[in-house]
Amino acid sequence: MIEDKDFSPDFIDRLTAGDRAAFAELVEKTSPRIYGLALRMLSNEQDAEDVLQETYLKAYKAIPDFEKRSSLTTWLYRIAANEALMMIRKKKPLQQSVELDDDNDEGEAQPEIVDWRYLPEKELASIETRRMLQEAIDRLSTALRIVFLLRDVQGLSVKETADILGVNENVVKTRLVRARLKLRDDLSGYFRERLVSEVQNG
Image (cartoon, rainbow, N blue to C red; front, side):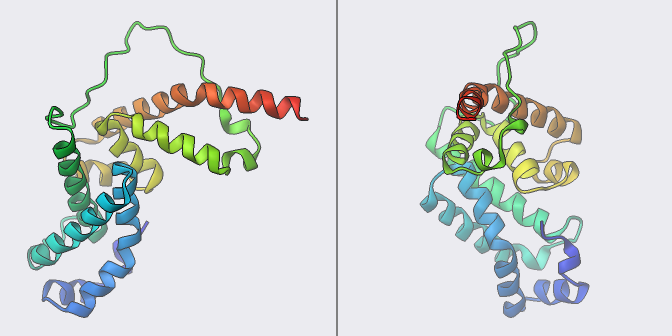
């Protein structure tokens, strides 16, 4: 994760003063992770590219007013996340908000969840496993998916994630737990088969 230690006070001053070279450097350093977030949120390369472009267009217009209350990276993630969420809403007009919208699981029987940490590393790194994981992430509700992506994929802190989403830290922690549990539930059958196959193949 890029921290503000990578951007000196002098660099930020040049950036907010409209220095185009400084802005180009900002884009170069941050665009891979911004694009990665958008791609994982939207699962569409063209949509992710559109979000990337809109993020930096809006950032360029707003950078003179950057108040340094958050890191540059967090600020950019917030713009990108909002752009991606707006695109999701356009594609799903019935989805009016990204509040926690999962059914209440209280009182339901807990599913059997296979712990796939014991799978060989080659299984976890396989193309098939990565595809299955991405598909499971895509099936999360928007609220859970974005928290999981920001925390577990992009590596942001709970505080940074809360700042980006405009919620308190307890909301982030709750959504992250639920996202992880749902992923484990969703993927348990797949990994159970992988474990059985590994045992049978010695």
